Length: 80
Image 1: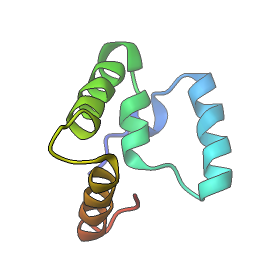
Image 2 (image 1 turned 30 degrees about the vertical axis):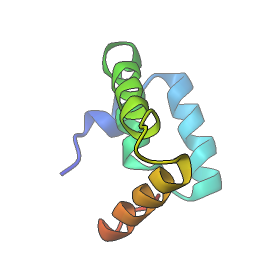
Image 3 (image 1 turned 60 degrees about the vertical axis):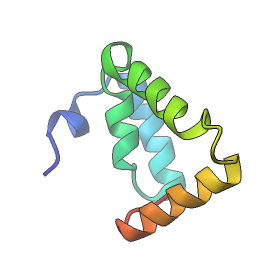
């Protein structure tokens, strides 16, 4: 289920950016829509949290974290 607001509730500049991305990729990834919707209220804080959780780890190197993300995306049958 996708919320209708995530496909229609963006500002004009975001819509233009999405059109450019869609021309390159063929579609807009769902996480990108979520992180850009109301970025000042939710997206920026959530993106910082994701970056901290995925990048600021001492147990994994950057390539290991990237490999894990790619593996999980494959299991979920979504694009990485």
